[in-house]
Image 1 (cartoon, one colour):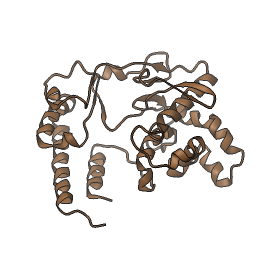
Image 2 (image 1 turned 180 degrees about the horizontal axis):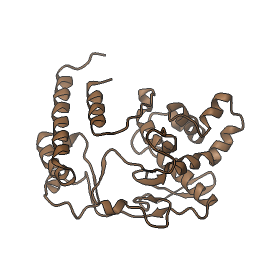
Image 3 (image 1 turned 30 degrees about the horizontal axis):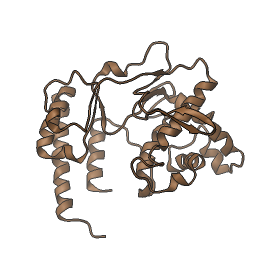
Image 4 (image 1 turned 30 degrees about the vertical axis):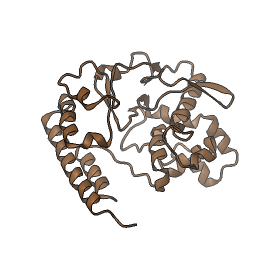
Length: 274
């Protein structure tokens, strides 16, 4: 485990986060981190019970306005920013492409979408004992489970090298959209609220646009990546953190940033030899 990863894990544990280790070859790490959200129904009961609601997230999306994320009365969940991504054709059908950023459903629904899927029915036809286990309601949240479905639906695309925006990049959105729409077609009384989003504080904006004391106009923030860690940018980013969190957590985040940058400088000055 790298020093930076170990540092991040320790801080996540400190704030009470649950960590699920899913092992895979490094070449699959990004696609797995995206697809695993579709398999939220297989989270251990020690983390979430069947009637608990699970809201997916992106690591670089921060909700800013709580009212935008409340469930609507009389519905079974919601899809945030549901109208962003157009449509796609697959398996002879036209599907709406939903983003994976924030999908809010009960754990048992996440699992049922897979249990009742056409993909699972096809996989069961020639399933071995091991495959049957991975296709069961007791399947582990693992690389093997995700890969079984992923290779079946996407074929060679699942195993190819992935670059941002290519055919493999959208596997999670495509798969989730198919499962959710197919599930809704079978359960006419199942209601999911499709909603838009408020104005976004976007990473495309220069840092001087982020340099403000009031963030009330924004519904969420799409974070810059490595750039945000630079000392001057981090001071600006602190204004957003201060707007969201109490002093204890703000101190914790700043301590994490300080230690992360120390490790980063050590790695930069003493790179590991191949």
